[in-house]
Length: 301
Image 1 (cartoon, rainbow, N blue to C red):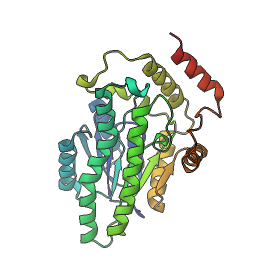
Image 2: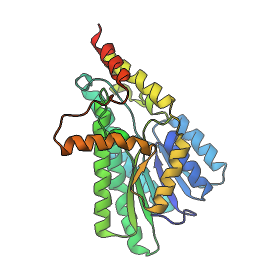
Image 3: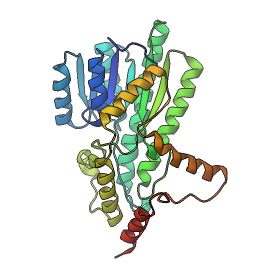
Image 4: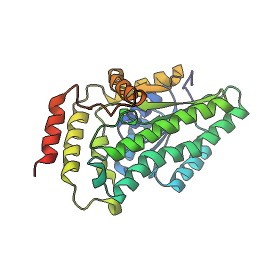
C-alpha cells in the first residue's frame, strides 16, 4: 500500500509499451522517480524521452528479465541512483500459442524465462531492498505488482505455455502476499490479471531472441496468433484504464486487479469443476460458434 506517490520510486519492466508505459505515465504525473526497463531499445528510448520531458527523474535500462544477472544489475543501478524502490511492477511478458505438444523446447524456455523467471528475479532482487528500507524507516511504504493474466486463472485451449507461465505468476504473487504479511506491515503485493487489452503482447515475437526463433510456425500456432491478434486488438478496455486500476489497487491495498471483472464468471465455473471433480467445462459454452470454428480449422487438412 502506498498512500502518497510523490517523490517515491517506481521500477517498471516492460516499460516501453502497454501497461508498463501507461503506469510510468501515471507515475510521472504523480511526481515519482521512474526506472524504465525493457528489452526493446527503440521503445525504451522513446518512453524515456517522453517521460523526461514531463520533468520526471528517469533511469532507463535495456535488459532481458529472463537473465538473472541483468535483473541483479538493475537492482544495483536502482539502489545507487534512487535507493530502494517503493513500487515494483514485474510486468514484462510475452505470448505464445498453439497446441501444447507442438511447442518446442525453445518456446518453453522463452515464455517461461520472461513470464515466470522475469517475475521471480524481480521478486528476488527487489523485495529484500524494500524490506531493508522498511526496517530503516517506519514511514516507508512499498508495493510489488506482478502482471499475470486471466490466463493465470483459466486454461483456454491452444495457449498452453502462456497459461502455465501465468498460473505460476498468480501462485508466486499469492505466496509473496502471504510471506510479506508474516514479516512486515509496510510492504505488500498485488497480482494484475488482465483479459484482452490492446497492448503489444500479441506481437511479442518481435522481441524473441534470434537463437529462440521458431523454424516454421505450425497450423495451430498460426491460428492461435490470428485469434490473439483479433481478441487483443478489439479490446474495449485500454492499457491506460488498466494502469489506473493498478494505482488505485496499490492505494487501496487490493490484491487481485482485474481489467474485466465480468470475466470472473469463467473462473467460478473452473473452480466449480475442481470442487465437484467434474471434467473441465467447454471454454466456448458461452460462444459455441467459436469452438466449432476452432475445431474445424484444426481438423481440416
